[in-house]
Image 1: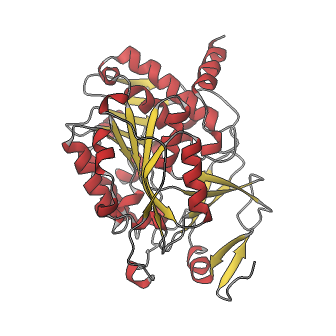
Image 2 (image 1 turned 90 degrees about the vertical axis):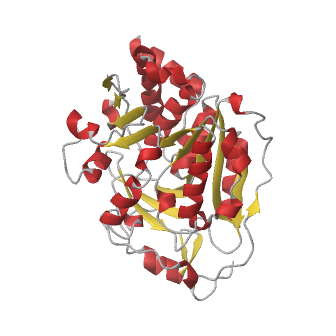
Length: 383
């Protein structure tokens, strides 16, 4: 394949030299990365093409979870414990937190849909096919003819924890417009799930806000996982402000210990009083994930901790998304779990197992478990 002189080939992937040079400066420790203005990128005056997906859900009574946001390609090193430069090879894996949740719910036997944008390129087509193969309703997905599908290279430490380097300058997911939203699909949802990455730049930010408002107005339950990726924001302050700008519209929020510390500017994430500061008056459930230790839960009437399932971690990519898929797949069937602590605890044991099983393989979507695998693991854990 001939490459333009302004492109480089990275492990078989052609990347423009401009994108390569700007993105190689990003690491997980950087907090001042600024996305270039969208006007600096040539844009075609054509709306994104829709995906020819599977059949649409018929009614709102089908426990549908609609996931909104980014879908991308994760490149995960085949050997843990090395830097990106030292890694000899990478495994290509579909990812993106909202898409991970959508696939996770479907794998668990639930009903899910994805709304977002990918490039009109080979990676974008591949991702659309993966949604279809996993029975995720994908007609809310759009192809952008003027931007590429996002890439993320993931460094795995020996303990399976990750560092990220992103290629999005801008990527197609950042360019979803309000006019491209499938509002009928949003209003059919039982739960509308989203993150914060789609809030970083326009026009996706406005599309995100419009989609969430449409869901809220239709009586849909809103689920929020901030999924902090600090290098993608212009600054730490803008990330904190952006994440909190939509905090009080959510009915369910899932956060990590790291995100609690970040949002409270360094306060103790293990202190219940600190966590309660993040509990807004209309919130129905606040979940705090603690990796292998399980999770904590907070409602207006009760709170507690549920232990995790102990496994040998290979790659923690997608573990939080698998957890979210685990709990949302059950809440979509029966929202009364939010009011009954014993049943909620059982649901969270299931969600913890979903997260634990996902870390045993490399990549996010490839590692997401089925319902049968999760139930089998839970049975073995008590045997």
